[in-house]
Length: 201
Image (cartoon, rainbow, N blue to C red; front, top):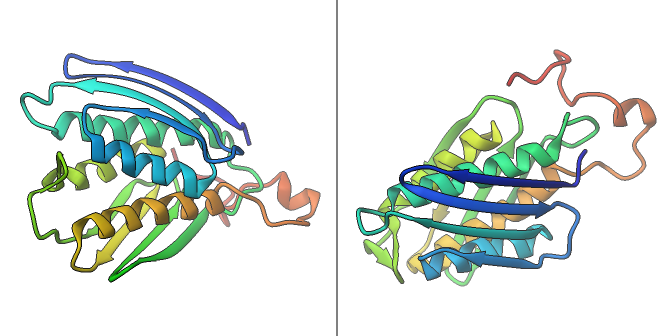
């Protein structure tokens, strides 16, 4: 598996640059116009032990939709690039993260078939400056970019806690999916984690 990836993407709506080191220490430099989104992505990187840089700007004067969707898309593509041929990795992972009264569950399968299962109800439209009505667009983009089946669920009273627990869970679930079990044989290390011998792209 390649350990590093870099992406630059510019459209009429957004401009995004991102760099990744999968086997990092959890250091991140995140800069978007949405402070709480920065915090969430920093939590994701820390709990996944990814070294991640992300600079993003967009037409937030219109809506946050384009920026959130494209940030998710770029981050998903970044990790897909870093995953390379997917040989020898676990492919799937999940994590359940509590945060005070909230509980989040995230599962990911690098199957080559993007699909999002999303269950989150928020009590308010904005958490900080982040439009919670658009969070699913981030994960839709992430699932498509990563070419993965992604499950995101959370319950609780505090929107901040629910969202932060989700991003922490995503980091830990993805870290496991991209990792190999210790002590695996050379045969497994050089093979695709698929019974049919191919992961559809």
